[in-house]
Length: 296
Length: 306
Image 1 (tube, rainbow over the protein chains, first blue to last red):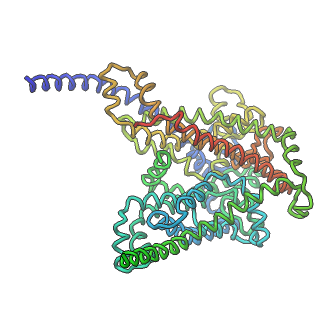
Image 2: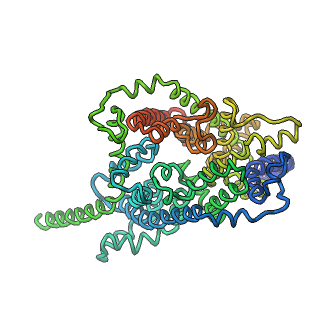
Image 3: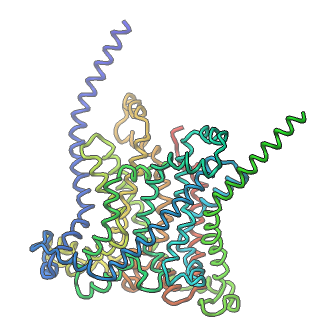
């Protein structure tokens, strides 16, 4: 009896499932089309950006709606890359990235290790104090920082962008700490018994174990530094130190007057490329870490 | 007894050693926090009470609340504040669109990952570069939007960035476009966290799609909604780069300028560092209030699974 009822119910479930399924299938197709059209609309400005960078001035200023470059002009890219200011901008950004990611990555992961795996007085209060700084908007501290960096004679170099970053990145410490919690602390105790010192435990055991999370965080940080505009605009007083974002913004105001939109778009495309390539290569981990931040 | 005591002191010596190492390990970010966050905040509060320009004496030009009174009676400040709040119309638009797209992506549809990537591309793109792009898209004479407009209607489109009202609409469109991908990802993660059997149970009870949405989806997404709302509000008060790139002078009749734009202009264009600091303090207070509402309101409005 029991079996029979179960089977009957099972049958019925199967049927409703099938009925719903074809209805659902129809809706899924409709929804797919709507979502695909909308997604295309979302990326269309970016496609248009690339298209414009290949257009001739005549086509751009023709006044009629054109999207496909005709003829295709690639000269604007080499023109941009021949501009000393643009190349210097790329190098300046890299000059900021390398020390900040290496030193800042080290100090952040070391601090995350201490917060996750070591016992000390004031641990929670210190952590909360650090975490609170995430909520402090840059706009609130930018004037005093500017004054501080001017007094230290840093504003004629890239130091205002490099040195603060080397002290560590709070959101990175937060994420690495979360990651370290999932690694068993027994490893720590075992290493302690073996007579390993604390730096050795960090360096030999936990650093290799958090490599994946560290990589993701460094990548996000790389993108953040690459795309940063406000801090460089305020802190870099001399043009020779301008980072890439400041350079393309000045290109925009300079070449828009000459209506050289192809050049502006080519410069912007190059400036966007590194972060976009990184995103396409590592989109899964990047999207995951964003999703985690919302769920907490 | 004696041996027990000895063990105990030995343990605490070890604990002390661990503590010293731990303090050393966190010294760097803590020092950074003191130098580049704590000190600047104290400094900003002090400077906000002075008519300081960076060249004259900070302590010799104290005006008390003078800067604040001036700010609060400055029409330009209120116009910037009003515009900052008007831009926030984009927040609910982005949330509704983001939730709808996420619900669509949460179904069994093909190309889910490609679509998610497409929606997310604007988020990872350089803010300056896409602001430059959209300034071009909004261009009155040759821009893409007016090209399409002319193609469809045969008449010339609006002056997107050159009109007091249109410039605000333009920037709202831009902000929704730039941020939508992030909202979608967060809602998608939230949707995937809702247990499937909730919907199955509701189906057995005969609940329709709308009832399921109102009674299961919406309440269980409330933590995400709340998170998105709070972070967008905090971000909304800091809008600056896109405004500066698209409308370097703050738009026609200062109609696109935001609070941070106003702050930047006062401090770094006019050199009124004390006055700018006072604007920064006002901004900090506003954001502090939003954060406080966040902590206070979380338990009140947010429904979690357990």
